[in-house]
Each structure stands twice: as structure tokens, then as C-alpha cells.
Image (cartoon, rainbow over all chains, first blue to last red; front, side, top):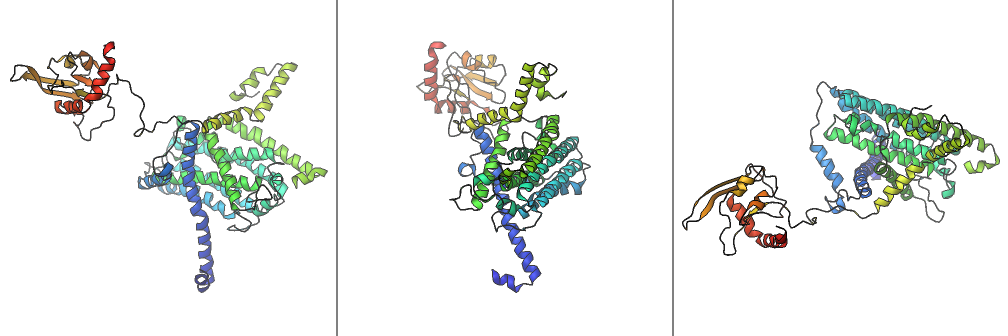
Length: 339
Length: 184
């Protein structure tokens, strides 16, 4: 391997090496997205006393592949008078940031694609861009249902981003850094040092906002089947639809990953006698993802005004209060609790 | 005050400033703030996650059937091989969907027999009147519920096909008739 890289001009070798590293993140991510859809159907089935998909391969394990193949062979229908360029650009705009944000995620003390200082800021910026894809998809579809769905979706994403951002401010105050790796290292020293304990309300709010941010049940008004069919992607079919689907699940994994990094100690093991490692990070992410599925199986959909009320009138005041509280506690002898 | 519906509980008790109501209100807000009800809900679905699954995996497993089940039709024969149907056309007359078509003529031994006995299964409503009306227990409905046709007309069952079904499942048919005999 090394020989190939040393023989090439440096610009090529770096590019090639970076592309390989990106592939090492994106391919496992795609596979986990595929299997997340499988586990979602399975888990929700179990919670409803059903079995879920179990026909394709052992325990239905090939189901996501069958679904992907089906979607690939379906026709992509362009609605009449829709804007073709934007119509096809929207799925790309949705999925690109969902993948791009993974660049700064530290999987281990050393395993990070680009270790930039303002990693958290970068992640926030990337997840915010995703809303453009939603808006463009709704507008370019030339359908009132898609348009209404995209408006709802956009408003919801924008308002929950504020609460989400504030919860992250709490983490910043504790960690004194925007670098995700340093945030994790700040939590070293066993389960009791994790930021979830001093920032418990912020963790809860972060997680609920994350559910709202990814437009998942019970905050999935954007696709409320009973009123607006399927929301902003109602006119999409085949692979274009699959890309939206992929983006939604990639975003779910991303926000769970962020929660694991910022509140649950990332790759650090909960007890001193276990070695740290990527396994712990994946376990924590899987645990949080299970909650996404659990929520979907449990809660009925919120009404739109209720979502807005929860975001603006409950979450934002609580987060602001807790940030001030953390700041205050840091000036007292108890500051050790908040490092 | 809020006009939002999900604080209905708090709305109805607002306005009243008595101490008791204050407590009620505080209790309500604490309850909703700690996500109490939501956690109860999660507990319920969490329990069901481990519960026994009620899915019946169809081609391998089947639900129990009644001996009176009304599925695919069959024409029966006597034990000596003679077909039971005497072409009385009672079933044709009683059929509410007019799914049965019968033509008959005299056979060489001077008995009346059908030359054509068609049941259009796409018309049939599986009411069982034909079976009930039959004086010789010839036309019956069996327990077969999964059959298909691949081309137009495949689901119009002719006399030969119905007799074949009857021959194939005679044991089951006879057993079911015997079981239900006392109620008929």
C-alpha cells in the first residue's frame, strides 16, 4: 500500500488516501442505514405483537437489500411542470450534509477523518444545510402537499435547532472546547464523569430536539399520512425517494452519534476496568437509536402547534435556565461536578 | 391563558385561585415536565417488545378451521363411483350471485345427469346456499381457501374440475359432513 502512495505525486496520494478514508466511513454508514431500516421494522413489529420482516434470508436479514434493489429498478417520475433540475438536486442536497457531517466525528482517540478545532460548529452548520434540501424538494415538486410538508418540516427543523444549539452550549461550557475529541476526553474517568449527569435536562432536551430535528415520530408532522400524504417527498419515487430515506436514517445515526459523544463519553468505557474503544461508541449509538424506534412505536403524532409550543415555550426557556445554572455553579466550590 | 388543547387539564382549573387548585396545577406541571405519562407509555410498549408474538406464519402455519368452513366447491360421488348430482338445478335456482350454470340430459340408463356444471368462482359469494339446497349432498363447499387462476376463465370451475376436487378431498368432506350431521 505505502509504495503506491509514495510513487504518486503528493497531491494525488493525499486525495486518494482521503477518498479511501471517506469510503471507510461512508460504506459502513450506508450499511448501518440499511440495517437500521430493517431493525426499525423488526422492533416496531415486536412492540406491536408482530414479527416484522422475516422472510428474505435468515430472520429477514436480506430485506434491506431486497428493498434497495426494488427501489433501484423503479422509475423516477417527474411531476408535470416541476422544476427538473431542482427536483433532482433536492435529494442530493439532503443527503450530502448528512454524510459530510461525519467528517469530524471521532470514532476513537485517533480515528477521525479531519480533526478540526470547531468540529461541533461544523456539525451544526452541516445539519442546518439539510433544511434547504427539504424546502427545495417541496417547492420543485409542484404539489401542494409536498409544499405544505416542506414548510412544516422547515419551520420545525429551524425552531428545534435553536433548542439543540443551546443544549450544546452547555456541553461547551463543561468541555471548554469545540473539538469533539476534546469534548470526549473531558469526560474521561468512568461513567460518573460523563456530561449526562451535570447536564441531564439538557441531554433530555437534546435528544427530544434530535427526534424533532430528524422529523421522526412523534414529531413527523411533515409526513402526516392522514393530512398531507407523505410530506415533502410525496412526489418522489425510486432512487430519488430512497436518497431521502437514506438521509433521514443517516441523520438519525448522526444525532445519536453526537449525543453519545457529547453526553455519554464517546468511545470511553463506562468502568475503569474495561478498555476504551470504538465498541463502546457503537454500543451507545445503538442504544440511543433504539430509543428512536421505541418512540415511533409508542407515541402518537404531535399536532403542529403543540410542536411549536414545545420547542419555543418549553425547551428554549429550560435550556437557557440550565445554562445560567451551570455557569453559576462553575463559580461555586461545586465546580468540579461540571469540570 | 393558553388555548392549547393538551393543557386542557390545566385550563379547566385555571381561574380558580384556591390553594387546592394551586397544588393541582403544580402537580400537573411537574407531571408533564418529568414526562411521567410518556415514560408509562414507553414502559407499555417495552413490555410488549418481549411478549409472545401472535403472528401466524401463513404458508407454514394455519389458523384452525370450522368443519362448516365454506371454501372452494366440490362435487361428490357415491362410494360406488356414481356421481351424486341428479341435475335438479335447485342450487342454480337458489344461487344469489347466479354463479352456477347447469345443463342436463337423459343418460342411457334413463337417469337425468348434468352435461355441464359450471361455477364461476369470481361471481360466487360463498354463502353456502347451494350446499344447503342440495337434496343429495352433491355440491359441497370444502375447507380449501387458497386457490388461484392465472388467466381469465381459470376461475370458472367446470364439472370435471369440481369432481376432481371432490375425489381428492372426499375423506375430509365426508368427515366434516358426518360431524355436522346432527345440526342439519
